[in-house]
Image 1 (cartoon, helix red, strand yellow):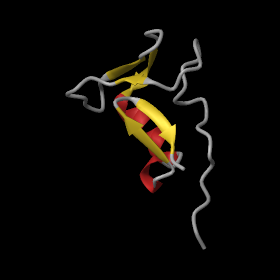
Image 2 (cartoon, rainbow, N blue to C red; image 1 turned 180 degrees about the horizontal axis):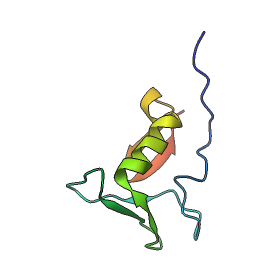
Image 3 (tube, helix red, strand yellow; image 1 turned 120 degrees about the vertical axis):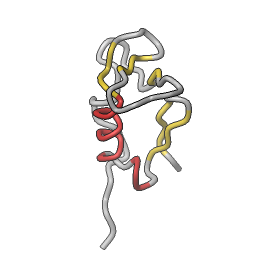
Image 4 (spheres, rainbow, N blue to C red; image 1 turned 60 degrees about the vertical axis):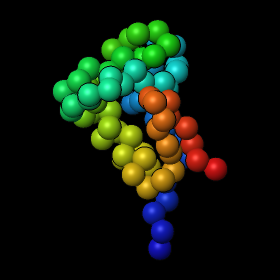
Length: 75
């Protein structure tokens, strides 16, 4: 039996101000690095927390991809 993953990300990764899911991720990121929205600059959380959220929602299973902070659904 395969693992069923949602095809949409929850609000944990989207910006509550502008709705964008586009993270400003510095080049030398650590788990404690503050991450902001690329579009409006709002603080979204630490990289460690956001990475866990991304992985829980299918990032680690290949449902979503992240390229330069932009999260997109595969397929």
